[in-house]
Image (spheres, rainbow, N blue to C red):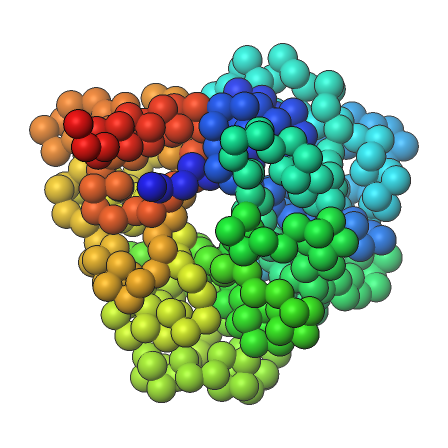
Length: 384
């Protein structure tokens, strides 16, 4: 039965990455709650989509922190704002969450200023202690920008951040006694940290947890930053010996340089290499159910129309025994598409399409709707 992953909690109903949004997701039937992880200045992992805090907290309205506004380049993208690595955990605990996309979710914005920013440890404790009696809830953390936090990033004072978020993630799971591989997935868009988790960090700590390689844009012609793994580009710029960092990848693909794309990893040979390190992949749903040419990058998602074609990564991944968890399903009209005939699709219709082509789970902002669809599918599959 496919798993329902509550994307940033029940983020379609409450401000994302709050304990309240995670708790609601559990109540709505999610199997896993998904925190994105960034570190504080003193190395506490917190649940935020990005380390720039002004999109999802009230930091910009806090005069005591006005001097910490700065510019930083994270994975090649310049951001202007307030960054988690410049705040202690004690300071972050004084901030309140805000709805990140209030123009789309005005009802969520009514909750601005009510909820605090949780640590990863608090999220794990919620999954552990807040699971219903009849089902065990899991966590599905994503390490955000791990290369930046460990090697490339600087704090406001110019000092190196030097935070190994992958190691800290494992430390929290161990401290919270939450290492059942049936209740944890670890995901990342970067390759190097997943390789290190698989080959070094998890064996050293005596744990074995399933890893998921997230995949960005799979169009080989795309020039967007999301079409290439950021860590590979960073390692190449640092003159690292790429064959040491990504063993076997050159032999698998016939290339290994800063120009390697997610499209290369999604090839049959790339997936075969990945299958030696990860349990599955997390592709963008628009890269799976293909749109008419030009539609997938248009500004209005509900104007997109399915072409009827499915990316071969789905069948190839399943042939290799890889799990496939596409991201992200959202129920609002702005995020929906049309079918091949131009008829509007509901989020349930898109989920069903993904399940039909082999998805073994899915990320969704409205977990109640994902859970209801999953249960309906399960009932249909039961013998009379």
